[in-house]
Image 1 (cartoon, one colour):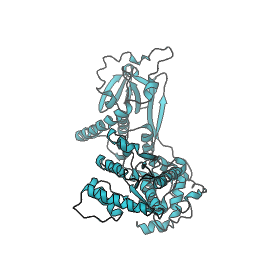
Image 2: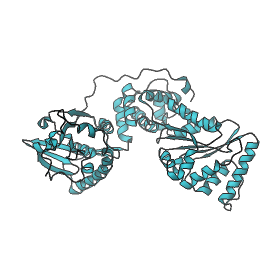
Image 3: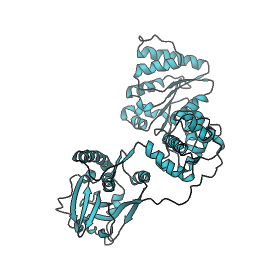
Image 4: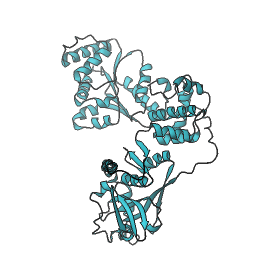
Length: 477
């Protein structure tokens, strides 16, 4: 389908969820207003750096474009969008932005530094300001960051000659916390981190972008917007990608409204952190080996996450008599327990195992937290059910299920319960299948388990979200 047909179907002037950094489409949430206030402070402030960070796709670059559009006339700006450069290359880029003449190829770092210093003095003498903005600043090397610190040494008795704003991803904060960059970090006078949109802001975000594109009515149902928040985590870039595909899906169905089912299908097509595919119950030896290798890699990362899991203390709390639970009894000598339980017995590998029992392969680069996993399961029309049986009646647990276990050292790990027969259970820990007695398994089991069931689809048609009054601060943005 063509873009023209896509827009004509919804009476839009243009695509509302383009990934281009267009300030017209910037939804100014409370966080974005605060971030903009920090950027404006960077223009007015005469000392130090201003640091604005945010997750990928949070809207940092678009916010920066808006700042450039609203820049006061007395401010000269150098905007660096590609900071993957050395110290000399950065100085050349700054000179080019400020239109400072230099001899190409022959001038040293010191000569370029002196040219920039002279220019800053001349601008200050004309009662004007100079501002350096560096986007994607997480790519700056330690040497280049130290050069920026030296640039802030250019000052008069009253003020700095160059104001600097650094915009980057969260790892920039980590980099600036290094001991060798302590002097640089001390000169940051204002910091702000731009997080994802809240659940309440998603509807207004959708309305703002659709209205800016020319929409005169609602095109997303309330339940579709709720699912969009869960699938995107509130990250604007992910919202845009999923919503754009959902509009295309509705157009192809000749529908005027994006429903929950259409949005779920769109999320299935565009999400990259979770991939699903059907497979036959029988797999070749090579396929099992490849799956085992992948699960092992996932388990390593999950082991790091689970090492300090808050569930650990709760599950291992002494019983009413003040004595440890009886699960320690009989644990000694259980040779079937694999070495390195913190990695082999990861939550993620157990999730994979119960899905494999259902004929589905599940792959993810995420840390397999409950929220992430269960949200992804909605794409497959499955729902997570978490239960706890204080009496630990293992015989009543529906299979397949993920069991929460603890070894004699009180380390939490997870196993997939595949089948129950008489007094024995078939389980999988990591990529190892084994058969144990119910007594052995109960000795390790906390009583908690998780199963998956098919989602029950609500009856009736979905109702579009009711119009909401838009905040006046977002008009015209």
